[in-house]
Image (cartoon, rainbow, N blue to C red; front, top):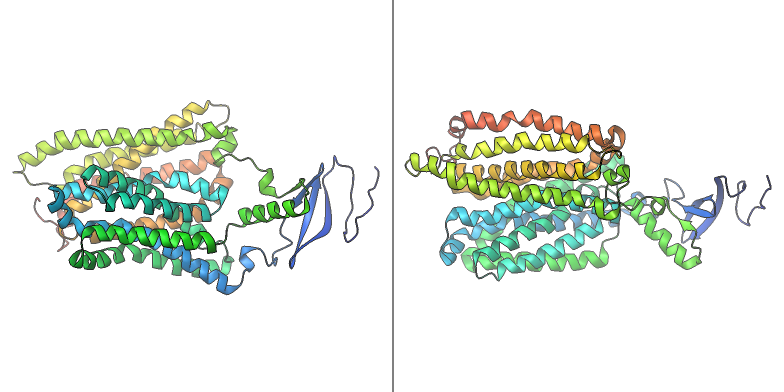
Length: 465
């Protein structure tokens, strides 16, 4: 084996290009020193160590606080948008000549967007960093809100609300990681507590702001406020929010150094990874196009569930309401929720055990159909049930629901990646399936005892609506 002379300013040993070897060469960039590993001519650029000042964990405290403040404001704007819409319900009902139930669909579709959006935004944040879903999601959701603010008919409002929710899910799906990326393990819990605590306040600020606006101007200005705040804050974040996800931050520093030095062989570990959108695609060795097809399965399931909901509501639910002298019994909506609760874990188990690369990709893609159906049937019936039960205070009920949902939405990304890496796709997804099975009895219990349970609350509708 022939030895290669050490380069000036470097320490370590070298060998032939067929063997991986380390060079402790110092690459100076500001105050940062980074180590390199060479494999067949490729130089791997990495953090110099746990105290590298360019690592997000080691940024100055004012920078960390500013980032925490900005991502909190971004997510609060989306949360406020989710709940502020219903404060103009009376004016919208009068202007468009629609029922309260139809108007509330604007809130339901927004929250459906929160169901459809995360499966897309989650992989985007892992691949391209936190800033992209934060800024792009807020900006585009603000643009779709213009459609609602300027609408002259109900379908325009409903379409606008759906897509506002889908893109607004970007910040909601990312806040858990964005709020903790630049804090170490000790401070992470404290930072997350403050950030999530403020985010939870968003759904409560919505009705407060909206009621004052509707009283003094009109319901349209509740939407224009969301538009203005979304676009202004998105612009500020675009210019001032740094990338906090360490692997992506390192990849961008590597790209910058590669350009400055002209060394095309300089790579970071992320550059050497597959560019697929998800771990499932990596395991199954799917191409970029095929890796996006599971989203089509989810979308198909949502559309099928929409049709099922419409058919059920116009047939059996309508008949039960007529038999009840025209009064709605909220529990009559729950059979579709029970159906969704049963279908959802079937889809999860299906997806889990068809993730083997030896099984054709179509099997996993088709598993998205029952997953999408189950999610939609559970969520839409949950929202409608809450509105039926707490119609006089529906905004507050939906705000509380949004708070609990945001808790899980913010917490899950913190352990999801580790869970899938340790358990594997099959067992990690199966774990979610088992949890879903354990929750199936919940809507059954409400179907049987719901009328008695809602009788305990002074704010609920005791008899039929």
